[in-house]
Length: 126
Image 1: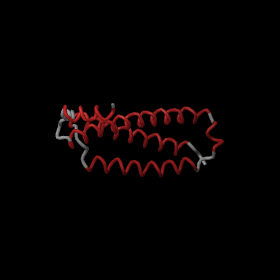
Image 2 (image 1 turned 90 degrees about the horizontal axis):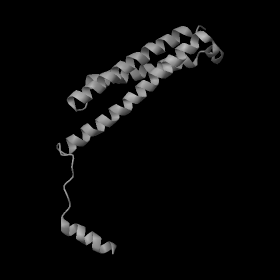
Image 3 (image 1 turned 180 degrees about the vertical axis):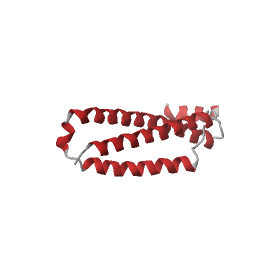
């Protein structure tokens, strides 16, 4: 089995996923709200294809991964996957901020407790 086609297909899929995640990041930064259903559906489809791609890669014999021609492709894939993971982490943080802002009505600061409440808590701790 020639391992090059599954590796190239996997690389293309990783590039597509990265572009999708990048578009989601731009959307979150610009609109500061959860992306629309079409964007999320596209991401789900790509992630489903990723499962299929990984299955095809697992079918490639491990000995062929030692070939110098494939080493560069594998490193390129690893680098792209790291970029995807870093962007996803940033997107999760942006989504968290968006969800917190929407639940608090835009107020990011909690109201200060009454001074009498603070005095009672302090008295209990003495």
